[in-house]
Amino acid sequence: MDKQPQKVAVIGLGIAGLVAVKNLLEVGFDVTGFERSEYVGGLWHYTEQDKTSVLPSTIINISKERAAFTDFPYPDSTPSHCPSAKVEEYIESYVDHFNFRDKLRLGVSVEKIRRDEEGNRWAIDIQGSKPEYFDKVIMATGGNNRPHIPKVEGMEQFEGEVLHSRAFKRPELFKGKRVVVVGVSNTGADTAAALCEHAEKVWISRSHGVLVIPRKRDGIPFDHTITARTMALMGMFESIFPRLYEIIFNWICKKMQDNAFKIRPEWGLSPADSVLHALPVVSDNLIPLLESGDITSIPKINRVIGPKEIELMDGTRLDVDAIIWCTGYKADFSLLDASVDPTRNTTPKWAEAIGSRGKPLPRLYQNVFSLDYPDSLAFLGNVLVATSAFPITDLGTMAIAQIWKGNSPLPSIDEMNRATDKHHEALCKLANRGSVVPGWVRQADWLAWADKAAGSQVYEHLGYGLKGWKLRLKNYTYEGAGEFLTNFLNYAQAVRVGDQLQLSGQGGCFIKDGDLIFAETQLEQIDLAFENVDKALKAAGGKGWDQVFRVNSYHTEITPEVGQRMAENYKKWMPNHRVIWTQIGVRQLGAPTMYCEIEVSAYDPEGANKA
Image (cartoon, rainbow, N blue to C red; front, top):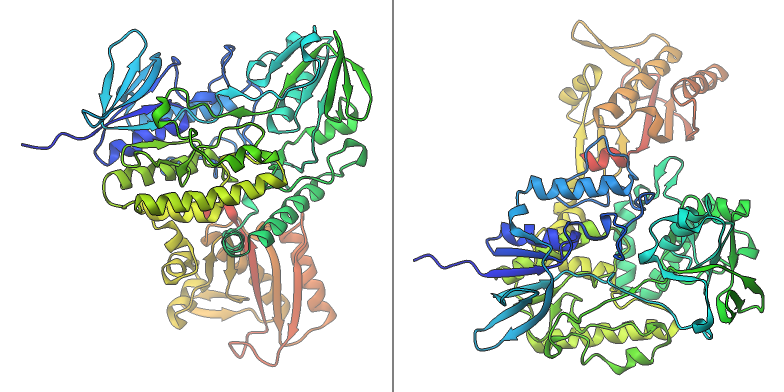
């Protein structure tokens, strides 16, 4: 008789819960997803109810190429930074593509999750129904469920409108009002920008400095400019030299900001807190709106001194009609019975640290597995990595699936406790310096662990070992002269190395009657060499000369006419940008009648994603 598959309950059907259902179904578990709302997708579904959700005006901060599930790309027609409605469409199509909608139970309110030791299982108490029993449980309720609102002296006397960003849905309701948005964050920037068209006055209140970076740089999504090489080096620094990693990470983000915006001192955004304490705000319009005066940056609120009057930390007093708190959330573990609540016995050092801000710290191995029942209780939404939640939760749930299936063993309980103690010690040190979220992890270490546990071998194949180089190096040639030389001399015309294309030197040659022919003069060869470079780039999946950033040209004779012909071709093939160029004189090239050779490097991140 076949053994029945183990039953798994997934609580919460935002993106983390959905990918958990899909990934555990794929390895043979009997999975049921529970969601109290009547829809899937969590905050990506706009609702006017008092629930965390995007606004209709929300645009994703991370490009679709980096904000997708690992095995389900966005449609080509979707822009890199798409509106929230397109993200919801993508999530719905993900469920339908993998055909697991029948495993999802919507509009079901889970009231409590208890351990049934006698049956070695978990009891799920459901509102208006009998308990249901499962072998394993994944908590995917996330960290955006309990609003965090700081305490302010005198707040009880304020008679204006007070709400958390979770309840902010319709900016037009604030028409003609004077509104303070508290918190310079992604949500704070979006909220303040949405109010500008309606409110009489909009202030954004800051408690610390922060970096602001745009979604794009020179028309390219900023996250496309971060190469695999950079990420590998940063991962090494984070693991071995964490302080140096922090310095470099801060420098990279500040450079992104300074290349895009000129930050005025009166805005109080500089000096910015370390990115380990405050991730950069991703916004295209916050700085322009500060420049125009549509938004005014103000210090932290010190106290409320009247029915509609506040005092700032610098003593300034303002008459305001509304305060909107864009101050984040606290994780809520109240669905779990107190005996298995992961925050019940966390280190007291966390509560003592100034940067903990009263947020609960769950005691979990790798911020995922219960230390009470690691073989049957896991948590999602407690890992902060500086990228999109889509691929991170996908990888995390693949790790859970493989571990619970027995393909990737967990360490012993003692080892997991020691690892968690070490992690919390590092976290508390960070919290003693400034604000930090409980989900902070050392990104490179966590990703390496999850990759190994999931068995995906991404690190192995995209690193710099033998397997990595074999996968990374892809060779290309082009019809005509390119194929002739590749077949005759056994070398490639182009090689893709990550997001770069490196070309062999291209000469001014062509095929005639099956033979390789060089143009008669060097000037004619220069023209043909530029054409052959374009062919080689496009054969490798690039867009041609538009992506070239470096040129080395070799000439058997350098004359003013040669320089002029090179310049003319630059203007013809690259009218909108300039390259770095080294011109080199040589005695002889690869053939007696070869008078010039052009070698280029090109940057092609989009082609790298498709390759």
